[in-house]
Length: 423
View 1 (cartoon, one colour):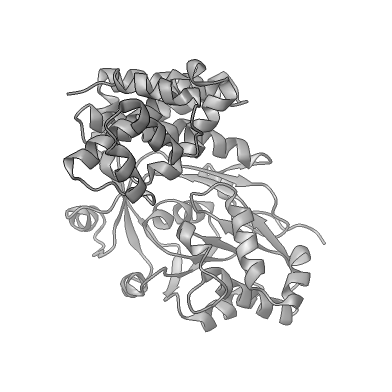
View 2 (view 1 turned 120 degrees about the vertical axis):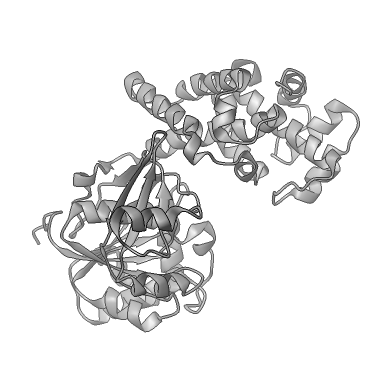
C-alpha cells in the first residue's frame, strides 16, 4: 500500500475540546489546510452548545507583551457532547476519518473501561466498528496531553477496553503517536469576547486567550493520512523522549522553582518572579545544570531558554505562582531529583537543590500560617512541616519525595533554605 501524502484531505476527530486544543492543535490543523474537524466535549456539553451555535467558529486572542492579535478559527464542522457514543463510533468507523487527537487530561487515561465514563473505552468501540466495517487504511491516535510517554499511556488505555478481535486487529491498523505540546492558555478574561467582536465582528461566547509561543513536537510514525502540520511549524521527530525531557527540565523545572522561590521571596506572578534578581539567578543556575543532562546542541538550548525567559516576562499573560505550586510532591521527583542524581549529588546541582529547598520552605510557611497546600500528600506535608527541628523537618518532608533518611540532600536543602531570598 502506498502511504498517502500528508497534504491529503481528511477528517480529524478530537476528543476533549477545551481551551488548550482550541489554542494549539486545532489552530495548527487549520493552518495545515484541507482537513475538517469533528470534536467531542470533555466533562460537560456546554462547549458543544456554544460552538455549534457559532457554527464552529471562535476567536483566538494571541496576547503578546505589546498587544493582542485576534483571528477567527473555523476548522470545526460540528461538536458533539462526550456521551454521544453513537456519533463517535460512526465517525471513527468512517474511512474518511484518518486521525483522532485527544486532550482528555491525565485523569482521562485512567477512567477505566466503561464507555459511559471513559474516552479510551469509547474510542475502543469506534475502532471495533472500523474493524467490522472492513476499513484497511490505518488510523492514527494522537495524544496531545501534557504527560510523558502520552502515546504509550493512550495505547494501554484503549487496548485495556478493547475486545479480543480488536486487540488482534490493532497493530496492523492503528498508529498510536506520542507528542510534546507547549502553549500557555489561561482562562479568557472578561474583555476577551468584546475584543473578538470589535476586531472580527464575531459574537463569541467562548473566545480563547493564549501566548505567542507555540510548540508541538510529534512522533514521525504515521502510516496513513495526516494533516500537513509541518506547514504550521510542527516538528516531526524520531526522538520524542529527548524533547519531553527538555521541556520537563527547563520549562517545568523553572516553573517549579519560581513557584516556590518566588512566593518565599514575596512575589505572586511568574513575570514578577523572573524579574526578581535573586530568583532569576536561581533559575539561571537550574538551567545550567539541567542543560548539562540534555544531549542537544548548545545553540538549540540557548534559543529555547531565551524563548522561555521571554514567555515568563510577558506581563499580559502572567500566571499566578500559587496555581503552579500545586502538587509539588509529585513534580519534584521527576523535575529536580533526577538531575541531582545524574550530575552526581547535591553539591553538583545547587540550582536543583534550591528548587527542593524552596518547596520545603514554602510548604512550611503555608502550614504554619494556616494556609492550604494543594497536594495529594497535603496531610503528611502538614505533619512534617510542623516539626520544630529544621533538619528533622526537612528530612520528613524529603521522605515524602522518597528521599531516604541519611541522604546528603537533606543537609543541602536545610542549608539552602537559609539562603533563599526573602521579602
